[in-house]
Structures are given as C-alpha cells and as structure tokens.
Image (tube, rainbow, N blue to C red):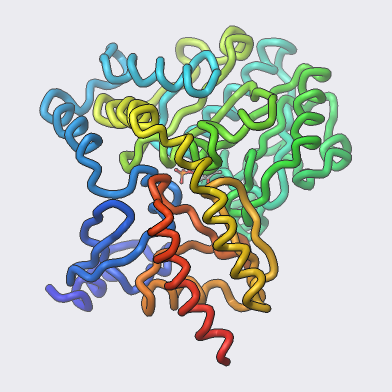
Length: 401
Ligand SMILES: *Cc1c(COP(=O)(O)O)cnc(C)c1O
C-alpha cells in the first residue's frame, strides 16, 4: 500500500478524535524519525515528552527484549522482580515512600484523586469532599482527570463530571484561598503547566500552597506527568522548589515509550488512605513496562542525563531567545529546562504544520498560541543548531508575507 492508501484505511477504521498530520512515521534513530519513504525528520516533540532517550537506544531495547522473552504479564496478584526493582528506583528518585503503577498519566491522576478522597474519609469520615484544581491545567481525558482539567471546552460535552471540583487561578494564592472550604481535601496542580502553555509555578505560590495544605490537613497533589522525569533538569520539577507533595503523579517519559504511569505517596498518606480492595489494575506495572522503568532510571545515571539537561538548557534558551529578538511575531519564551515554549502572534497550528511538512521538523503546540518544544533529553548542541536552521526557514516564510 502507498501512503495515501494507508491513510484512507486509517480514516476508514479509526475513530476520528485526532486531526492527524499527513505523515506516517516508520522508525527512529536518536533524535530523528523516518517516514515510510525513509525521509528524515528532526524530532523536538519526543512523542509528547515520552522518548527521553530518543529512538533506537540499544541498551533500552535489549533490556525489553530480554524481558519480553521471559514474561510480559502476570497480573498484580503475584510478585515479580521488574516491579520490585522499578518501585525501589522510583521511590529513591522521587523521594516519595510508596508507589502504585498505572498504564497512563490519566490513570495516575485517577489514583491520586481516589487516594485524596480516601485520606479525608479515613481522617474525617464521610463528607462531600472537594478538590481545588487550576484553571488552564491539563490532567487527562478520563472522567476523573477531566473533572480537574481547567479547560472548559474539554469538559463541557461530558457534564455532569465528578462533583466538588473548584478552579483557582494558577500562581494566584488569593484565588486558591478563595476556593478553600471546610470540605476541601486536596489541591492539584502541575508544577509546570504543559498543555496549558508552559507556565512554571512561582516559587512563592507553590510554597504558600504547601503551607496551606499543612495548616489545613489537606493533600497537595503535584502532577508531573509531563514536567517530571528529568525534563526540567531535576528528576522531578518540585525538587527545585524545596517542597514535597503528598501525592505525585508521573508517566510520559517514565517508560520511554511503553505505556506506564504511577502515583506515589508519602507514608503519612499511605497509612491513612487506600487499602486492600480500594484500588487495582490488571496490566498496571506489568513485567515488560516496569523493566522499561527500571532501565530508564539506570540510564539516567549511566548517561548522567540530569547533568546533561542542565548543561544543554542554556544553549536551547539562547537559541529560542534569538527568535524572540529576530521575529516580531515571536513575543516571549517560556518554560523550564527542555520544556520550552515560544509565544506566537501568528497561527501556531500553521507553524507546526509547515515545520513538519516543509522542514521535516517535529514540534508541538500548547494552549492557543504557544509553540511547544519537548525534545528528547539526549539532544546535543548540533541538534539544536539543526533545529534553529529549520525553524528559521519556517519563520522566514511567515515574515515574508
Ligand atoms: C499527558 C498528561 C496527562 C495525561 O497522561 P495520559 O498518559 O495521556 O493519560 C496528565 N497530566 C499531564 C500534566 C499531562 O501532560
């Protein structure tokens, strides 16, 4: 079949919930993707922040192939070594105490919400407990995670959602206070808002929210599904704020391409929340996926990847800052580490499409007007130079108009 026939077949059989780009990716090597005709693309999206180690990493592949041939699935009724090893590494890397593995980011959020509700139930008994979430946030597409996602048009078609969710303004502590009631059981936020447009939490805001949670005996849930796993230069972004959440969610790069997420809790939360019979999953944390997690944490150390992210970030920032200086329609750079955005006054969807189709540069959008960059964490200065040339070609096309 040729490309056109493949795409026709896709549209015939797949539910149309994505306007996919007119590209078929076939394989990858390092920071490059290749389509069905072997044409090369530079990837500054990492499959939405997943492929931290890029494509075709042999250490990673060998670990998974070995496990694949041993056992891929057992269910959670039995112990298996990959999960035991992965949980120890995740606990160590996050500074949290207990882990539950899920299949996705949204499921990690579901678990976090249930944990917060159960914690309040254990401490205070039944009550119509409320959760404060942030406007402009993104936590996933399941009913629970959608209920705390602060984008009206994602939520509206599916009302009524989970009740008792109030939305505060991100980085506005007064607005959080205004939504606090005696029924509040948790506050959920992204340490760096991703989909909403690359907004890092202000240090002062996050510290005040942490203090409020301590004072009120409520739980702080930090969603690091996108900004975690080294993306901002520390394993988790909150580690740069001198605070710790009560519940942490992680996914995306956690498995570097196999579907896995997790929610992690402190001992204080574990001791007064979910117990036997409260929660479960058939696949979650199966031997194949937890082998990937284990391998990912090993490779972070082997490759000194956090040091690399910290070292390469200024070069990317300078490159992006030059775009702000050079083009009138690029008004601001925003983000942390290798999670960066350029705010545009030209239609960002057109930029993303032109970059992909004409320059073979894979980039993302966020919010209404942000060009979002989530390159593999292994990028080099040379890759950033290649990115710069390609994006300049795209922007020059718009500047000429
Ligand atoms: C992607 C994302 C999710 C949802 O993860 P899925 O694996 O798509 O379910 C949740 N929270 C944040 C911050 C995300 O970026």
